[in-house]
Length: 479
Ligand code: ZN
Ligand code: MN
Image (cartoon, rainbow, N blue to C red; front, side):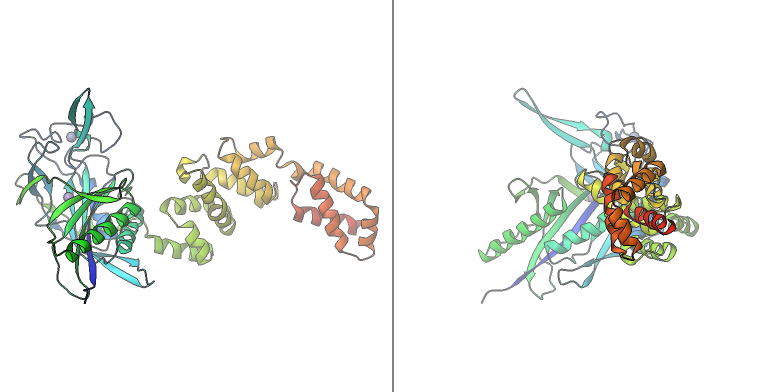
């Protein structure tokens, strides 16, 4: 008889906070600069430099913790996580272990069976980032360089309970974090750009058992897909070991996306975690806690509800606009510019977002500000251009920085809406189709459709059929 095994997965997620400075000094918390530019005696870890904890970092971390339903510990402190490695010359990393900032949180995901599942967060703590090692080859010599720009940058580490049972659940947990945390405004959470790093702890046990067996840690996944693949690979690897009767050994492995395998990694020497005597206890008063809470942006679900109530949108329309904090803010700016909410929803969710996605751009990266989209929609709303021309105009707005009205005029998209031009077309259609005019007078109203079609054709497809039909009918009835 073969035993059925189930996977037990827990995650440790490092999230880079988007505070202006590093955690304990005023150096910019910024990436992409020349190596070792953003440094000072504190983040270079010179002996005797004294760390000053940033207020903004604490506020952003508390905001993230609240978003993840954590209980905030109003008194927390730093520990020294002792290890020696060239990326950490002072010999210890300031982190919170014994008394973390927050804990007992949770997020909800939809499981593979469609049921809601609550995954628990054990702790959420502050931690300074370490320097970055760059390995290069100079001639035949392999060299390792150290860039301290990242040293001391503010992180929160989210440690989950071992609640996940499949690669899918782990991926959904990461997706939930990637949506919720940026929504709270505290962090970007990009696996690709390294502002979020996910390590997975994986072990197996007989299905239904409660025991926790020896786990293996897997690192170095830089996409959600990679996380799922790495966990799936590790589950399979451990299953094979168990079948061969071999023991699972506690160690760390690196995911190699190219080969689709995990490989054993040489461990850093790591030692004890001892209370740090230099950084004062972090004390968050009731009042400060309340201020942070009030300053948090709306969570997506509440925002969606508000869009329904405030703007009279359907749930589907509201969901389309609130897919990200960015698109929600964008939509509100368009609506505030006087565009009816439903029209804004149709164009933003139905046309603008897909058009931006096709180009691989976020809304902010396009040339189309809310003001410019509102300009376009005002032209549509006032019948200055028809929806078809509006769609063409939207595409042009991606390339051309001028106002929608200017572009529409130059491209002749508003030509047929120009009343002089339209009058000429209508007169010509009536003059050239006496039989259809006669039919209409005899009560055959379908001939109005024919005449409308002729006018739209003469306008080169630019005129609004509804407007033409209405004008033609007025003319025919008044004659
Ligand atoms: Zn510094
Ligand atoms: Mn850590």
